[in-house]
Length: 161
Image 1: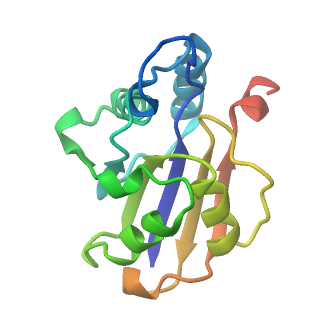
Image 2: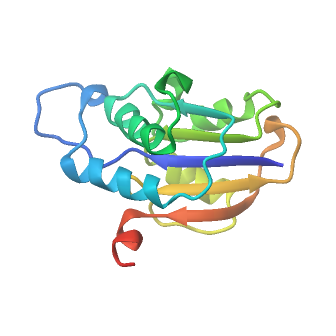
């Protein structure tokens, strides 16, 4: 059984004259990331991966802080700075089969595309700081195709509770 959690970066700022990779989180993005991270009950992870974009790394660091996981546990890969989902899917298929429970921090439209392709629930849009957990009844990551959407956590749904 393989479990994959995709977490989209928090709401980012367009105010600064910086490259797309360097855009920071807005205060709302920081708060939403803390909100979702704090709502997660299970923190059992074999590996944490992130896009190199500032907004993805900052979101990742918030989750790691809440989970009490050292920041040196995150591995950053350029191919996760992907908006189509093709590179992220290749990355998933290349994961070490010793890993059972993996988290990836990244971007849309890649994540919305992937959760709809790989999961059992159609989601129109994975919002900023949104989390979708999928499980696959396979032994090898290269065999990941269609799985079951196990958990969906979006900040707006947590604010209404």
